[in-house]
Each structure stands twice: as structure tokens, then as C-alpha cells.
Length: 444
Ligand SMILES: N=[N+]=NCCCCNC(=O)[C@@H]1[C@H]2[C@H](O)[C@@H](O)[C@H](O)[C@@H](CO)[C@@H]12
Image (cartoon, helix red, strand yellow):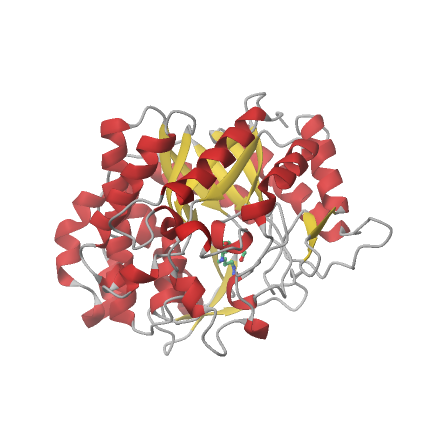
């Protein structure tokens, strides 16, 4: 098995709303998650991101922990409403100032910043104007992206436009389990289309002013038929289009998969097909967020892909109920290369929620997470050995944090956070990852 290249990025990832806290500090505007988390019943325990990991104030302490961890890259997102409080208008210098200081502090430790422009926290003022259902949303996003390109492209060399637009569209507009909590197939398809146009708007804007590289982070999940029955095989094929190709094809090929309008039927926005060509603004790399595979059975009532997820009885699951399936990462990376050609790839998220014990004498024993990371890094190494141009790996997540609708009930962190005291405690998995990075990934 070949090793990891010396240029390989060993990182960790977070997002603004999940770790920063202080959502309205220094002139920041509210986001849709600030609003959504306050709606009764939306988040486990009625939790909000008001404090989270208090990273907005403790970022220097957290960067010192990153330095101890030995990561050479850190993926974070910018809270749009900190920088442009009403989403599309006046800049807030204090909001931008936080990210300016964050980037400088990272670089001072030799840590490469990877900046995600949008990780689900749309300014609430833009939601009041229709949010991602408004055709102007692509321009709003392009204008916001421009602000950050101008301010930070002299130091940020890895940009991501959107994080998991599929989750934004499906959980935000179809299932309603994420902000803004709307429920409609047509809305989901329209929001997805505008998110893709927004991605293209930002990439196009970057080409005019940017000097480095820009991509997008997608949640990609291999779909396996639960049986050899034709109806299950076909259901898995439909879900593969729905979960993976719906976004990959327009971004990388400039067209929607032919099957997508059939899956959405009358709910598919007709004009979307003509405008799909606009979406293919060539990217420099693809971010792959990999967590698990899906095991699919036919389900005629399931909309829109008419497939339902099942679990094998003997499956090993994380605390999220997701099957631990490292080989799916290798297969997904190889499939992307076969299907879309040579494109640099970063694993921009991979990690596990575990039922961690409480810290005891400064230690948190989470062997399951260490094993999860190790097995997925072996799977990544396998893909590297078979020709995938894999440039880096970002563990999700640096810190235990606000896990969206699960609130603080699910812990993904390499570092434990006591949310009552904000005390950080590196877990066993952090030491495992630190030692691995020291060895450049050798002897996995
Ligand atoms: N069944 N199933 N399987 C996997 C489905 C994954 C969809 N959720 C994600 O990818 C989110 C991504 C998000 O960026 C981050 O902000 C979240 O904290 C992590 C952890 O939840 C992941």
C-alpha cells in the first residue's frame, strides 16, 4: 500500500454556527439557525448555538489545541450574517475582523485555512426575502463571496462555496428537519437549483479575482441494494441519482441527470433544465463529506426516489445510527474518478458520533472513534494507491459541537467540550490522530 504524499493535508473541520456562539455579537445579523433553533420542538433539548463552543471568543485557545494536534490544515466556515448582517448590503467590519484574525492566527501556526463560504446559516433577513427560493439568491451569494475573496484571498488558498447543498435543500425544504423548516418537494428542487446557481456565481466571481483554488463540499453516500431483487436494485439506482448525481452532474458536467425530472415529476422546476449549463463553472477540486453508505429497499411510497433505508442486523453503527462502512469511501472515490475524470479531491469531512464517557482524570477513552478514523484512513490510502488524486483529509470534528437538530446530544469531536464550563479535553482519538499525523500516516 503506498503512503500518503508529504504534501497531504491532515486537517480537522468545523462550521460557524456549530462552534462559534455569540451569534449576534459585534453587529452580526441573525441567521436562519438562530431563528430555527428557537422554535419549540426543532432541536433536541431546545438547544441553540447561542454559546456552542464559545469559539468566537476562545479561538486562540482552540488554535493552540490544533497546533498540539499537529494538523497542518483547518476547515472552518464564515457566518454570512456576521460579515453582511442583512445578507445583501452593508459590510460589518467587526464581523469580517474576526475571520481576518482567525486566518492570521492559523497561518502563524503553519495551519492552512480551508474556508467554507456557506455552511447552512443563511442570514435571516434573506430568508424574509424568500431565501433560497428567491431567484436573486445566487446573486446575493455571489456578492457575499466577493467580499470575502477581496478580504482574504491574499491568505486563504483553499475555498469552498457551499457545504452539502443537498442537505440544505432536502432537510431544509423537503423534510423540514433543518432550517428554514419548510416541507415541499417543489421547494426542495427549486432551492437546490438556486444553491447550484449560487455555487456557479461564486466560482465565476472567483475566476475574475482569485489566485488560488475553489471547490465545493458534497455529502456523497454510496447506495447499495439490500437484496438482489430487481426492485431493490432499481431503488438503489434511483437513490444514487437522488443523493449523488443530482448535484455532481450539474457541477461537473453542466447538466442534470436525465432521471431527475422523472423523480420529481410535476414538482421539478421546468426552467431548471435550460439553465443547468450555467452551473458548470469548472472547479479546482471536489470536497467529499463521507460518513456512511445507504442500504436501500424498494418503497413505492418514498418520495422522490421511492427507496427506503434499512440496516443489516449485524451492522456496526455510530451513535447517529449510521453504518460504519469504510470500504464505501474507497468505492465512492474510485467511482468519482471513473465517472468525472481526474479531479483533485479532499475528504472534507469524515468522523463518527460516539457515546463517549465523561472525562476522567483529564482523559476521554473513545477507542471506537480512533478505530473509525483509522479504518477510513486505510480506505482513503487504498483509493490513493489505485490512482485517486486525494490531497487531504479533514476529520469531523475538531470539537464536540452543536449537532443541528440533535443539539448537543451527539458528540463528533476529537476534543471533548464541557458546554457548562467550556473546558476542552483532547480524547484518546485526538492522541491517535496526532500520532498518526506525526508519522505522516505511516503504519496505519
Ligand atoms: N444515514 N446517513 N448517513 C449520512 C448522512 C450524512 C448527512 N449529514 C451530514 O453529512 C452532516 C455533515 C455536516 O456538514 C456537519 O455540519 C454535521 O455536523 C455532520 C455530522 O452530522 C455531517
